[in-house]
Length: 82
Image (cartoon, rainbow, N blue to C red; front, side):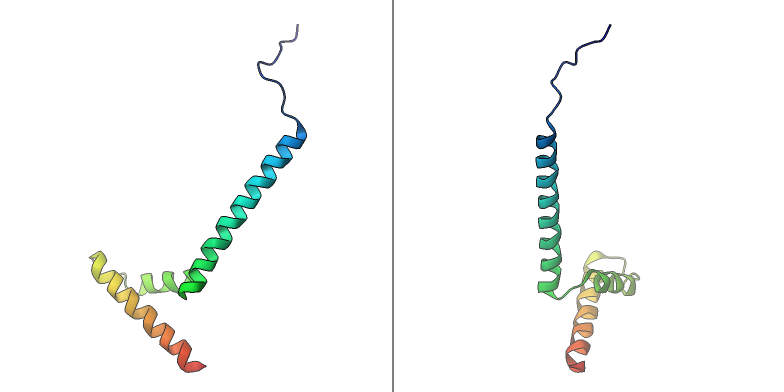
């Protein structure tokens, strides 16, 4: 004896449409984050390097000040190389 499913099986076209919509949303969010980092001139690799360079500071305010100075020095070196 087979039991009937309580809900009807979704059609394949709906599954494909939902998957495509989810992919579009994910790509939009990713491109927005990348554009935000590029616009500010702070690449994630630079932020990680600055965080490691300023790890000795116990307080967040001191660490953030060190990181902003470290990134500014990095940015000025990049401008000087042009």
